Structures are given as C-alpha cells and as structure tokens.
Image 1 (cartoon, rainbow, N blue to C red):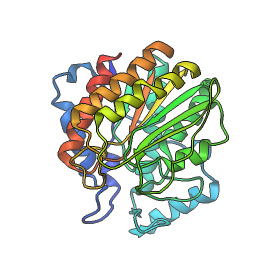
Image 2 (image 1 turned 60 degrees about the vertical axis):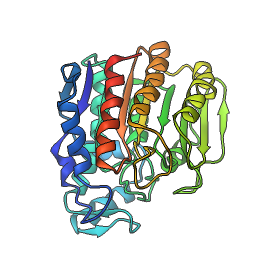
Image 3 (image 1 turned 120 degrees about the vertical axis):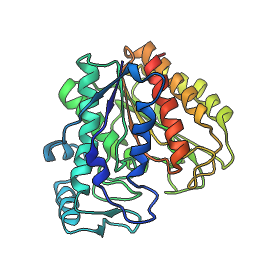
Image 4 (image 1 turned 120 degrees about the horizontal axis):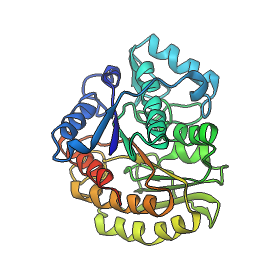
Length: 311
C-alpha cells in the first residue's frame, strides 16, 4: 500500500492571481488519485504540522521567524518577487514539511510501504536562510535530517527529477557525505546552478546531471539505468527521498524537456527497483514543480501508480 499525505491547508497558500504555483495544482492531483484504477491501493493519511524545532534542523531560527512574520503580515513577497505569501502560507509550509515527516513515520512503522506527499508550497529551491523559487521551507532536506535524528538512518538517497536544479537541497547537504543527492535538470535554466558533481563511491555526495532543452525519456533513462544505477549500487541507501517535480513534461509552460506523463511511471519504476534492492522498498516522495494542470495530474497519477506497484 502507498500512503498519500494530503491536507486542505495546502489550499490556503494564496500566491495571487496568475501565479503558476497555485492551489489547483494539488486539487487536480487529489482528484486524479481518488479516481485512479489503483485507488484501492492507497492509504490517505492526515499529515501533522512540523514543529519550529524540526524546521530548525535545516533553517536558521532567524529565517523561521522571518517567514512566520512575513506570512502573518501578508499578502507580501518573501525574499524575492517569485515567492508570494499570504496569511495562511506559514501554516501550509509547516504542513508541507510535516507531510514528509508523517510519510517517513508511516513507512518506518509499516502503515504503508512507501508514500507520496502532494504538498505546496514546494521546497527544493529554499536555502538555509533565503526563500526563492516558490519555496518556503526545504521539505526534502527536512525529511533527510528527520530520518537521521529520529531513526538514526544516515545513508539516504535523494532523487530530484524536477526540471530545475534543487539548489537549496544541494547547498544544505553539500557537507554531508552520508547522503547521495542526485539532480537531473535542464541547463541552461533557472536557477543556473547544478553543473558540478562530487560523488564518493561508498559515502554519498552530489551527482548533478544537467541536460539540454529538448531532452526526452530516452536521455533520462540512460542516466537512471547507467551512471545513477552504478552510484546507487555502490552507495547502498537505507532510505530514498524523491523531489518529484513534473515540470519536465513536454506540455509544461516553464520547462523545455520532452518527458510524457508515462515517462514518470518509468522513471519511478527505476527508483522503486533501487529501493527494493537496497532498502526494503522504503521511499517517500514529495511534490515540487509541475504547472500545466492536466499533465501534472496525469504525471502524478503515473508516478503514484508506479509507487503502488513497487519494484
């Protein structure tokens, strides 16, 4: 069974008229999963709010206070004009981080074999003390620190297939050689990072794989089945976290990569194979980008279908 960690708090993050990161993103995913032919394999679980102490595992207290105060005074922009917030955005951000933690708990405790968190705001661009790229708290990095602190699980693989490089995730994990962070992303593209790679065969590191505009599923699968597979097999993760951005879809207005909705089924199948080989199938995936509603809905359904089937 696959856990789905959803809460209506995610709808309360109001980004304003015309912003691509809008509440309907999670509404269409919820609808798609509820009506999927594998809906009987899903366990819907209510995520808790992350505590300030937990957010402080990766963010400064000064920044946490800054986010809270800016949201409460909203609507305003948080640190950059691409990251608008409203009075309910802070609660949504705590719920998004708490969703990943609730999913981890559910997998570790055996309530479900893996989990998907259709959350907003997303997280992988958020840095230690700076919001950017629609992101308030770095959800996947918080999940990694939570795994280490609560469960003493240290060898963690993070797979980020969003069309944009997960710059915040890389920055906050760059000194942690127990974690293998992999990001495949379009380049050149926002935020302009993600060109350097430093992987240590048995102790993690950073594996960036920039791809040019026009790349497709065959280009991605060569990496997933080739270099990434080699690194993962050497590393031997105890748990896998996924930054699941669906904006590398050919119909997405923000990227220029030519994945299809079905591509996300195949990419996820490779990740579930890694998990079955190395860590008893343990995966928690969290939503990042994806801004065309129909392709986001279809891609998320294919992603979760692959999770529900396992390796």
